[in-house]
Amino acid sequence: MNQRRDRGRLPRVSVATVVVRDGKMLFVEEESARGLVLNQPAGHLDPGETLLQAAVRETIEESAWTVRLTHLVGLYQWRAPDGQDFVRVGFAADPVEHDPARELDTGIVRALWLSPAELRAETPRLRSPLVLALADDWLAGARYPLAMARTIGI
Image (tube, rainbow, N blue to C red; front, side, top):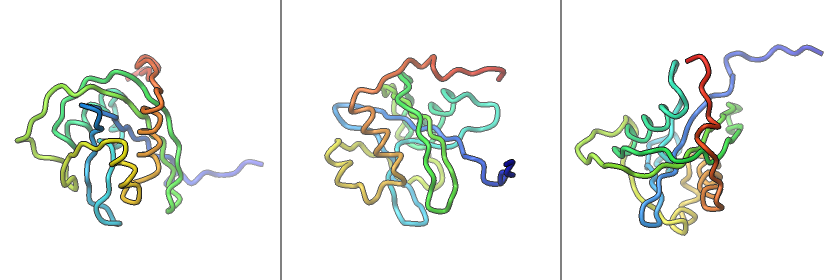
């Protein structure tokens, strides 16, 4: 049976970055319809942009931290309560430089560093289950070569 897909509801591709310093992970507090939520620096892939470029760009825009990507952590698929499907590509990165004068993206209130215990205490405020899944995978040692995020034809 051939079923038509709802082209207006194709999965949205996003990237997120786990950045760790002194045992704490970088998160952003952002405005949402639910109020203030926590997320890794994350966002959607722009047209003509590689996954790696998107991860670095989103991290800078949302946290004012320049990072160096080190690993692919995982690939995640999630259906939000509104029925929208998301595919998230999770990366790990080392912090390189912070620009405290840089203006953060619209909707981002602040960047903050949380320990794994502090993150778990904030579980009700996580933007989505993808946040904890990525953090847990990184904490469990998931590390894959960046070369797995291949770009072809861009």
